Image 1 (tube, rainbow, N blue to C red):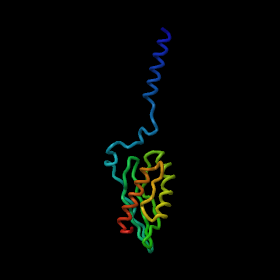
Image 2: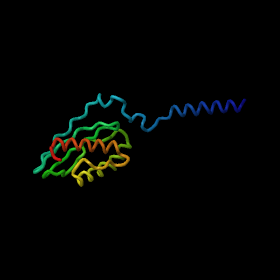
Image 3: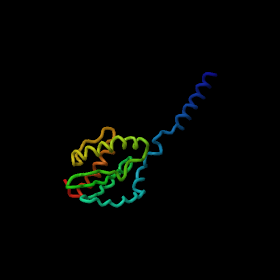
Image 4: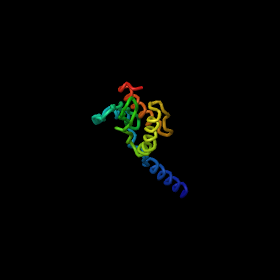
Length: 143
């Protein structure tokens, strides 16, 4: 009888512990439709650059947040790509940003195009970055 009581109490304690466990992503994952309810802050106005043109790309919404870039063109070439918005939904996004965004910028400046490889492990960030970049290129009519 003692063994049955012990195992019953141990099972109940284990179930309580299991159901009360909170994952690190529990509150960080956006709920369906939550992106539609929030209004994104307007992007800062483009900065005038002598001999160049600055164009903001579309804000691309993903499951992990919003990504938007600002592209500086000079002499018909992509001179710089700056981040206006990036994923900040949870800590893992911040780590991926540190890895992927500089690598994407470097690839884009080398290729002078949005047709570059995505960064492994940061596919959603890479695709959003490149989609925003392509929209800026389309707006600037530079190919």
